[in-house]
Length: 195
Image 1: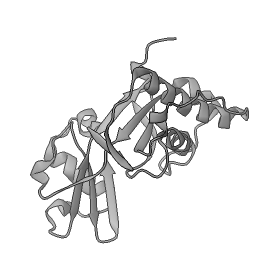
Image 2 (image 1 turned 90 degrees about the vertical axis):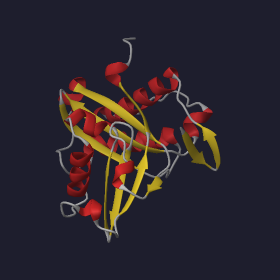
Image 3 (image 1 turned 180 degrees about the horizontal axis):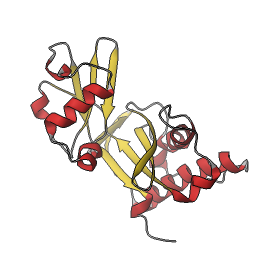
Image 4 (image 1 turned 135 degrees about the vertical axis):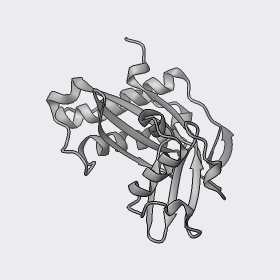
């Protein structure tokens, strides 16, 4: 798995770095709700590399917010701060998170590899690839874990991608549609050992 951030490099995250990002996400949300200044761990140099990322919030088994950037706009550590607050308070599908919900949420972070253009929907590997579609002035993205969580096959995955982008069913077969895939390092609070 490779990411580009000026120079191309092999990219992975240690368990400690994953823990730092998850703590950063929770602290960003908690400080906004409490009004107290946030206290963040010191990021490693790797966490200061630009990366695309998504922050997903679940409450129980239900989605509670998900916001992200496909492309690298800022260092990963800074992106997680911003995206965690956006997911908690600015996802238009949900009301803003409230303090009473904080103990009930789980945070998941997806760190993305760069987009790679593909020529055919048949190249999409369910459970391996996230997919990004562009057609005319619309675009949409679904993360690699989504079809696994929903029990979708490739056809269903791509059908829902069209719907997510606000496009007609079957938009995948439109010759003007541009498809790209990416992989993700996915980790969440549910997987973290108790401290």
